[in-house]
Image 1 (tube, one colour):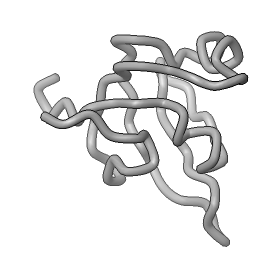
Image 2: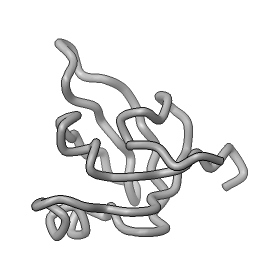
Image 3: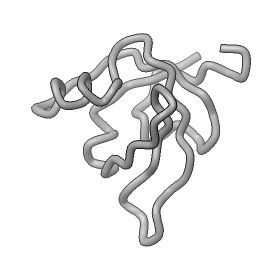
Length: 79
């Protein structure tokens, strides 16, 4: 499957992180967004510009401009 920005992964489509870049890279690592992490985009917040992701049984809201620095590929339901 193709690698995409995290913001391009459809809601409720499991994905695996492939690369993290940008100035906030270490913060993303601390939040659980690192190569091989399983992430589930849950929903877009009211007003847009922010999405909520499930990472390690935790819900984390990221602005789209931040989430665009995380590259991922769709994992499908089996992993």
